[in-house]
Amino acid sequence: MRRAIYPGTFDPITNGHLDVAERALCLFDEVIIAVASNAVKNPVFSLEERVKMVQESVSALKGSDRLKVGSFDELLVNYARHEGACAVIRGLRAVSDFEFEFQLALMNRKLNPEVETIFLMPKESYTYLSSRMIKEIARLGGPVGGFVPKGVEQELLKKFTL
Image 1 (tube, helix red, strand yellow):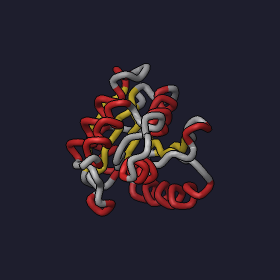
Image 2 (cartoon, rainbow, N blue to C red):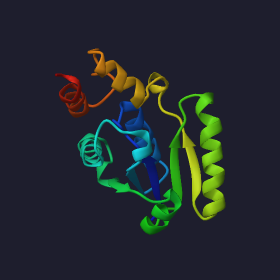
Image 3 (cartoon, one colour):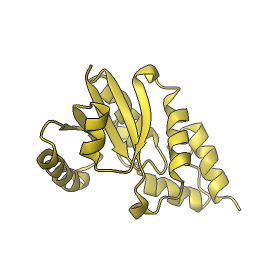
């Protein structure tokens, strides 16, 4: 079985993230969407809230039986080894993402050469999406419905409505 890890903070998960996960299913038998603890980024949602939103969001996707959700608080390559993954999926929206992702991929390769990094691009209509942008729109009372799954939209409204 070819298993891949799709890591991220997913604060919150967007339709662009889900598009990349679906694309990864075309290449791998199983994809684990791994929610990073990542306290350095000061996430708006707790790890538990993010995992729950990801679980609810992937349940409606085609091939959801091959999408698993997990969380981790360790080196990504160690988590990949524990999960028996042969690859890490990283989404690239624009050229500006590439330099950081390239450096990360090279470091991961140095730490564990058995885990390959695969870059996937989302559908063109999602290339401008970022969790940071979605949170800012929601914080300012703007509509986020076309950018995130319905359940995530509701969680954003709860979080940012006084």
